[in-house]
Amino acid sequence: MKAVSQRRDAATADLLVGRVLCHDVRDAAGKVALAKGTTLDGAAARALLALPWDEIHLLALEPGDLHEEDAGRRLAAAVAGDALIA
Image 1 (spheres, one colour):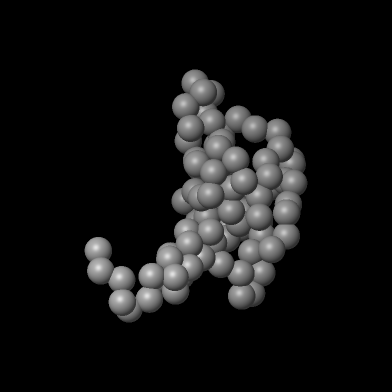
Image 2 (cartoon, rainbow, N blue to C red):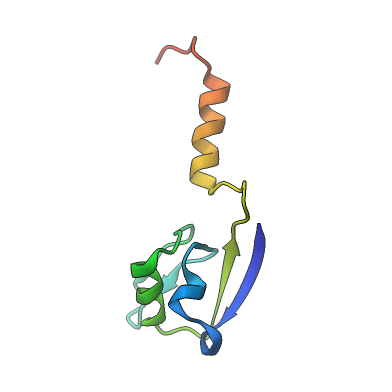
């Protein structure tokens, strides 16, 4: 994965799609509009472009990389194994 610092003036929805937010992005009222860890799809990318920000920090996942939620589920399943009784 690659860390990306994205300036608003160079941001497009196409450029943002598939990237992961490294921090919450708030609306003009200060409410969290997009949460840290969100993988941006087309709708989220357009929503992000409508919010007030100058620079955001993102992760660009590379082939074979997993989002932390997916990686956590895989790790939990591997550690628990088949013998775990809940």
